[in-house]
Image (cartoon, rainbow, N blue to C red; front, side, top):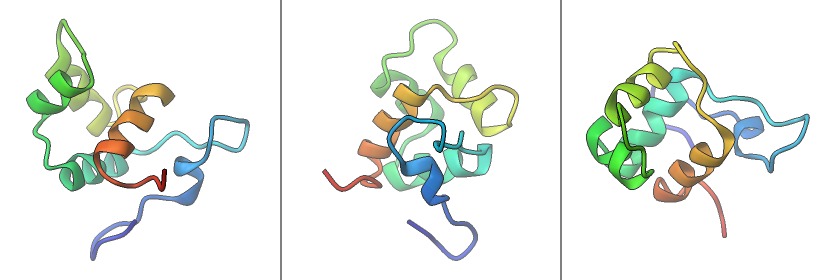
Amino acid sequence: MSNSTHTIRQECLQPFSTSWKVPTGQEVAEALKLAGFSCSIAAKELNLKKNGARTIRKWVNNETKIPYDLWIKLCHFSNLLND
């Protein structure tokens, strides 16, 4: 999926394997935007309890990597996956 400023790489939208690439903070931010989520809403929808919105901000700021399972959930909310 793409917009005028950035594209989420296909390698980030693959099933988990050695070919899966961790999305960048910019790609996480794009997925959040496509889902219409603020950090707080995303934390709630992804069932992140303690420091949820802070965790999302760390992903967006490239301070930590988003885990595959949560990335896939975010992709589903963002309609990035075809299933």
